[in-house]
Image (cartoon, rainbow, N blue to C red):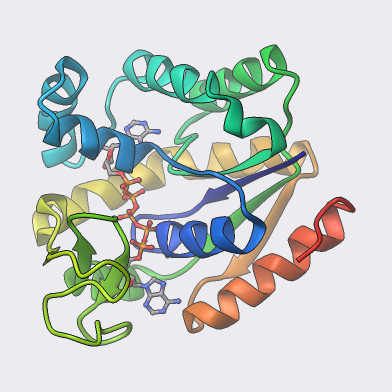
Length: 222
Ligand code: AP5
């Protein structure tokens, strides 16, 4: 099985790459941010608890996210592998992930760290558009939709995320930077971490990810 984890600051392109990688490798894409946003939309109790943290650019408490992720890993589609995006965010979550995976006899094959600058992050997040229906990402300038305001894939309406406002992006970056170094060290010590520059166009970044993933995992045939 193939277990890929994408780490990186908000706006580095984790979601964009995870969606495309999941299509290429025919593996489930697990995004904790997406699952949380769906819960907010569905007005679940988890969504109600999470919404305020998300709108303020803070991490949702570890215990809530761990429960949600455990439930996701109970689904049988993860047996052949997964592309995990947005988890872990700190060492405690990294250890929880190890526990969840070992209880299911699953493992991480490769961890990608998508590296980019604050300047690129702010440019990307301020122009991000997301499909309300399928969650596909676009960008006003970098990856514009073919028809204004409409998703290329499903025709759904595009919207700007609430947490992409300037103040919240700054807070998200601050929260990210506090935990990132320790998380990177954690996976470096396990010899699973691969750093990539996420500054290139999304096709080039995907190509680099696929090349490294194939080198690290003999079972990958694309
Ligand atoms: P989440 O949704 O995970 O947000 P994030 O980690 O801040 O990351 P983003 O989704 O903002 O960015 P991305 O790296 O996926 O970039 P994207 O591909 O969209 O989490 C949201 C919130 O949920 C958190 O703040 C927290 O409150 C909560 N949460 C989630 N997980 C949690 C956890 N584990 N624990 C606790 N709380 C949690 O790209 C950005 C833009 O750039 C797009 O417009 C895209 O089109 C464009 N773009 C992408 N790649 C390129 C490229 N190569 N060139 C040019 N443009 C590009």
